[in-house]
Amino acid sequence: MNVIRFSDLCASGQAAGQRVFIRADLNVPQADDGSITEDTRVRASVPCIQMALAAGAAVMVTSHLGRPTEGEFKPEDSLAPVAKRLGELLGRDVPLVANWVEGVTVAPGQVVLLENCRVNKGEKKNNEELARKMAQLCDIYVNDAFGTAHRAEGTTYGIAQFAPIACAGPLLAAEIDAISKALAAPKRPLAAIVAGSKVSTKLTILKSLAQNVDQLIVGGGIANTFMLAAGLKIGKSLAEADLVGEAQAVIEAMKARGAEVPIPTDVVTAKTFAADAVATVKKATDVADDDMILDIGPETAAKLAAQLKQAGTIVWNGPVGVFEFDQFANGTKVIAQAIAESSAFSIAGGGDTLAAIAKYGIEDQVGYISTGGGAFLEILEGKTLPAFEILMKRAAA
Image 1 (cartoon, rainbow, N blue to C red):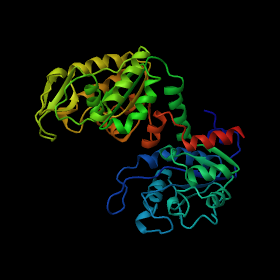
Image 2: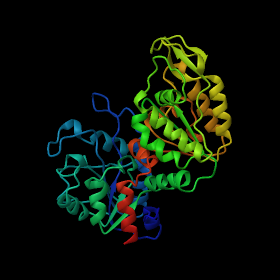
Image 3: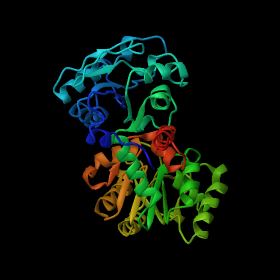
Image 4: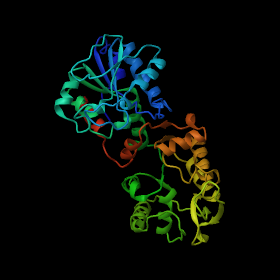
């Protein structure tokens, strides 16, 4: 994927004295009082800003926060808490600028945070007039917000069309490199773990991966639907019986390529979905009519772990059981540990996946942890993200 990289512009001195507009992803979770409860995204944005400042650029940074109504700014929409945290991380004052579309004053070596971009009328629908105005604010546009790369909005697409130079920041470039390594030119065998409650939400991903991967591990409610497709009874487990045909088609597509979708041979069941529910390990052929399958069994987990340790590349999206309840967490824990111990290049994405990685403390043993939920899923679907598309067009121009 050929894009201009901001790091190259800085290294060559092209960013010195230039007005640099960085689209970051600073959409952080907040408490009722507005305080930031988790600052991963703010910390992830710092290297790009530091790179621009070190290059001698005049730096403007913006992001969306929450779901504001365009043209109607409310105090709860403000990036003020983010400006405060960014200032602490950068060790300098970060002024917050409101009503910035018509013009911004910032000197080389300085950084300002531009107020919530989604308050601007026309941002979400990528209004051309707004995009052109924003493009006039800068000499270099930098997209460093992978989490919004699947949206064609004013600050993610429109401004990149009209800015003198449009490039990828270090965070976005790292995502491009990791995705290319995992999916475009993977070391084989390529194993993908796709788990979640519904096949319907991941069907296009499953179909896309079935054309490319050597092993497609399904988990959660998705695995239950695949068990139905394999002729197994699943009791009152979460599944989509109307999509059994689609699941069978994925199994057949894999089989035709000499690849497989491993079906669980044992499962962990309960009579109710509750934190204090009693867990029972059963053969996959012994599930009762009033059972709910809430995890893969230890035999299945061990088999999958052994296969993952032999993989060359692993793509992980979703825990394989209800890992929030410890008695149904073993499958996800074993999978996580196998990925950590594997010599494969691994890439993981999605909120629940990141929560599992944090729970089992394997952050440093996963090759790349993707920062984008929806964007990561669309990449797995085989889509070209709008933000990537426009940056590639500008690089080729």
